[in-house]
Image 1 (cartoon, one colour):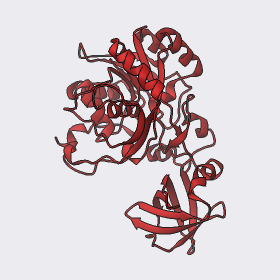
Image 2: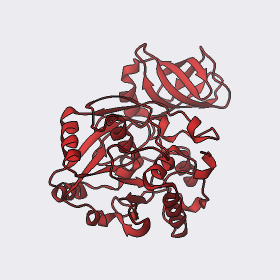
Image 3: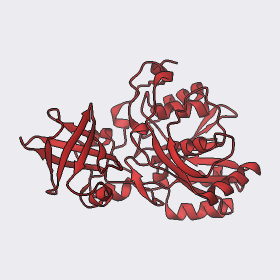
Image 4: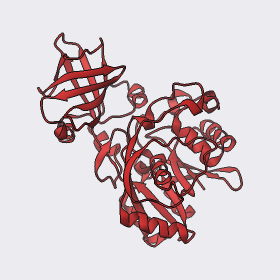
Length: 345
């Protein structure tokens, strides 16, 4: 399957640079059974969720994972933290005007230092002057929210704003570990979550998938089947897995909020029912995939040629997905992380 099949034309002004108030976005309704597309508002989502629906959220919290420094020559360096290793080093993506070399020392804006251990392309393994295990705490103090580059480009800015600390985070975020937001969840308010619990009889569950570079890295091959996903950590608590398995067996509709929730559930349901616990998911979902657990999906609009639009195409069908995207452009929906959403039933 050619990657170009998942391309579409998007006017730059439709890329949302600012978030609307939570719950104020538009929502496209895509019905797989009739092959139809309708237009609604996210505030009306309860109209499409009945008492027989179980809603599943990804509660991963976004780390302020970008941090900055300078080389001895004065050249600027930008890092994106991806995770710590047992040997005390950390994995990052790094950008600099000239190639970083092993052994080079970068002085961070905080005054701490980084030693470059290994550099392959943009991937950069580093050792900080403080323990690698302290990186999350360091980032909370000194880090910058990892807004997608297209938002910063639209704003004409190089860093996030203080208000993005709250805006680029779901209201139900739990443990930190993501380097990008599970954006479908950004639409929810505490009030709506409580209404969801009432509507579904308390059937609102949480899982965790820490969003890594596997979610947002571009597909660089020509054939979809040749793309290899990066690994992302996920976890499902035993109690949540038991409840979700009971709901699925009882015929309840499983509504996954976001592609990361879909990936978590489908990874854990390799045998048809969820296995509790966690691990690393490298699951790549594209047309031809048979879904094992998820019955409905809430998702934002995704970049052309991305693994995420491929997942949506696998779920809704390729033709219906591309038709929906064409209509979203024509109707001037707001796209990507701070944009509008799509409910696929």
